[in-house]
Amino acid sequence: MKFSIKNGSAAKELNDCVILGVYESQELSAAAKQVDAVAEGFLTKILKRGDFDGKLESTLMLHDVANVASARVMLVGLGKAAGFTEKQYCKAVRASLKALVKSGAKNAATFLAELTVKKLTAERRVALLVEATLDAHYQFDAIKRKKVKADTKNIQLSMDISVAETSEIAQANAGLVYGEAVALGVSLAKDLGNLPPNVCNPTYLAEQALGLGQQYGLQVEVLEREALEKLGMGSFLGVSQGSETPPKFIIMQHLKGSVGEKPVVLVGKGITFDTGGISLKPGAEMDEMKYDMCGAASVLGTFKTIAALDLKLNVIGLIPTCENMPDGRATRPGDVLTSMSGLTIEVLNTDAEGRLILCDALTYAERFEPSAVVDIATLTGACVIALGHHATGLFSNQDALAHELLRAGEAALDRAWHMPMWEEYQPLLESNFADLANIGGRAAGSITAACFLSRFAEKYHWAHLDIAGTAWKSGKEKGGTGRPVPLLTAFLVNRANQ
Image (cartoon, rainbow, N blue to C red):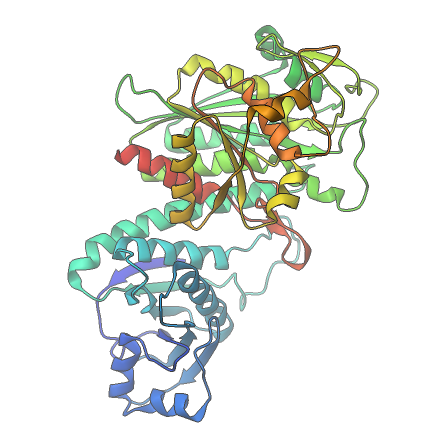
């Protein structure tokens, strides 16, 4: 899709379609009132007849409205006017895009960015509109032989985004840049998650990282098995040893901050397929375990976004990636692995493998003397039970860092929830035969997983995002969500602006 920013009259915009908002109380938005006046009260008549009620996400397409330059006028339901929220706004935007692609229109002017949304600036309204539009426009058909027909989401659209005042155009253009950059990262994260595991394996992820490096001038290094052995990453290698596909350790560096500035390190779990290993998962829905690399995908997506923004910050990305397979060489329950930190780990369940690859990456992160480390992982089914599919689980050894991430998530509409990680949970990881066990039992499973990781993050400020419930959707809308790229981007942009 192509976007442009304008300040114009809704009645005079010459497009295939002009998009206007209507509240549930039959209250017309400012742009809709303007069109209604030119059209001699036509929109008001429609509302009074009950043909459109303004309920959130409802749409009505009108054709050849008198004295209106555009061939079509789309009314979009905004819901209740009182306290009109960002969520309502984004839902209305998505609904308008879905109706637009069904209409056959190839270009449109939207006046939704002129709406008053809490206290959002024009920059933020436009950014959210662009993000929501491109999210709704996303289509994954890269490996389908039969492509989606041109009359659906695959249609090429151009959209003018109108702002109320000419003084807002500069802000709106900044919002457009931000929104398109976030959408680029989200789209990449979705694509990587949606690819089948026989395509998106550790080698493929490494190739994607190297490609980003070439495209944006990032420093990218990929460590192979021999280098990992020299580093002493016995925990990471223990997970990978059951697979014929070699492990990779990807190191990405976006160094656009000031010289000597301590970097933020993002660590992404990259299990490109998780059978559970010897502790084999049930067969039902195991295909969705291709999404066990969504932490890695979100790091790659975030790096694409911050590179597109040319963000003035030092950011390091670490991605340990491998498969968790159950062949004759695979790690067994009862095995003891020696991590890069020197701590020994009794493997009680080989399906708790994500923490085993992350712990070595967290130790590796120490060498960068980071200002903060955030790991992102589809780590525990227990987090899905606790929080469902709406909020990402957030754990941290520093409350200030946790609050930074929470605020970023709220602003980006990519919310997280701060979970406890009290000292009382740590004894659940005790082992008779090693320094710690890799699971702590059924109770508080997401918390004990975070406690495990915290043992390897004691030398810096650290946060852990458990995205098991938010990284993808199941059922009819099955597919990657691209989360938490918006949250991570907002967090990093806020740090760069401090």
